Length: 119
Image (cartoon, rainbow, N blue to C red; front, side, top):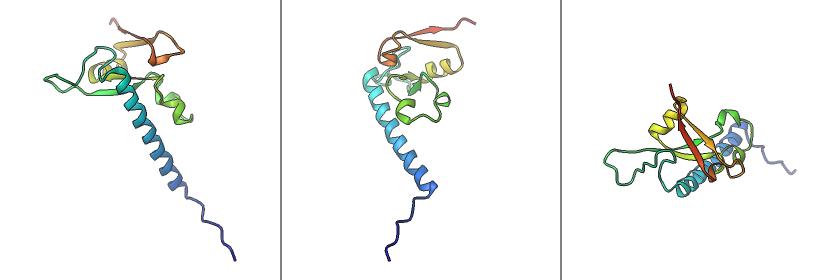
């Protein structure tokens, strides 16, 4: 009698999906660092050669919460991600700094315009 292989559990399937997504995001992050020259796109600060520590973050122009349910390749890619320092990243999330993509076809791969919000 020939048996059938046991199907993967949902937990195992989710674990594989999460692992694939982590690898995808890591690859995109490396591409973003290369494209942006390892410096903040808003203020051009770089962690290299500074006396105070500067941490750079990958920021999604279209928030992950708005793309939930889509494939990871659509949610995280070089067209919608930019590199920002701690301060600029916080300013964007606090709505003190806005960004505008100049060419929608290029997205973040093209020019991005930053503007401080007057309060």
